[in-house]
Length: 260
Image (spheres, rainbow, N blue to C red):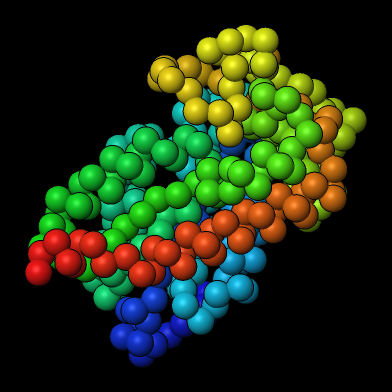
């Protein structure tokens, strides 16, 4: 169900469900996609997931304000690191106070990764007495990595930001927001060794960079590979992957057993 449609007397009956919090951002996406791209996409993923398992989850509205300081030279509306950490902590505290014991932070923006994990560490310590409290964080393209790899046509370096995948989903769902005449490639691609950036490629090192230090266009990847047909496939693969995770997440009891 959608949490925004519930009323306060409904709350006690929802505590056994998984509460899903979609996380987006408001940041530049090249010259051809809108600022709200991440939030639009995670919203479509969330809608599809809610339709598939409505009776087992409580879907919150998309939290559109993300952590995006690396985009500030191009343009963004962003929370700084510690305010974002506190926002996630406050959000989870509110759900816990209403009885939630399983929370999935369903992410749609890479910049949210560090503050979400920091917030979860703090929440784990704060609520250590609640052995039945499970908070997980997952990014949809990581959950669907195998399926996305099968769908994509671009080489390594082709999917990162305002790329083949994101442009495809916008073409499929809201094509009026895509200005194909302004599509440009950007970012380090397959010939750049360790510096190649791809959302489906794990990096063996970590650095903090501003976005314009590795992309002149605000893009990482190859949006010219995008099609509306692939957009539908990417979106369905993402939704199905999230549902598979929810199915398993809902059965986990290892924390409770460890305290028995």
